[in-house]
Amino acid sequence: MTIDRRNALRLTSLAAAGAGITGGLGGAARAAGSRTAGSRAEDGRPAARQLVLTGKRTAADIPDVLVPGTPYFVHYELRDADGNPVGTESAQCTPVTVGPDGAFVLASLVLLLADGMITASTAFQRPLPALTEVLVAPRRWSHLFAVTGGTAAYDAATGAVTIEHLSREDDVLTIDLD
Image (cartoon, rainbow, N blue to C red; front, side, top):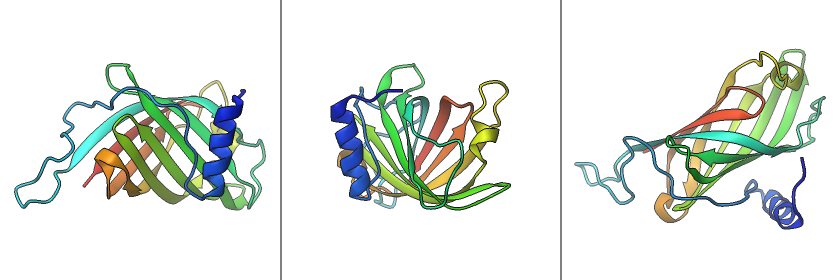
């Protein structure tokens, strides 16, 4: 996969800042059952909402052999339930340990949506690429990120992001905001 110079600079700059990586921007994020920004629960706190988005991988540098301390990144274009482009998902990942059952990975996630940005982080057990990156009958796996903040409509966001990897190129994000 190739990345144009402008996107490569974005990726490098944000990764160096420790905030993850970002890419292009699409339309507004919409999901069934989502509440609008600024909604309030009965107790006056911001109302909880859920976004469910699908991702198609457009760039990655996952090595065939994961090495502790050697980072890699992934980048996905996101779509809403109607198939409309809504933004991007990018993650900077660093394996801490690697063993026969997979790698323990630290990751920073950036979701860049039309109405703001959501940041999240995690530490998770990742199956080795040989098990997950095959094109035929890939192994499904998922992991959970803690939302660490956001901007604009997601200012001071908290909650969780669950990413289910359906195949090498496809994932589903369930974003649960408090």
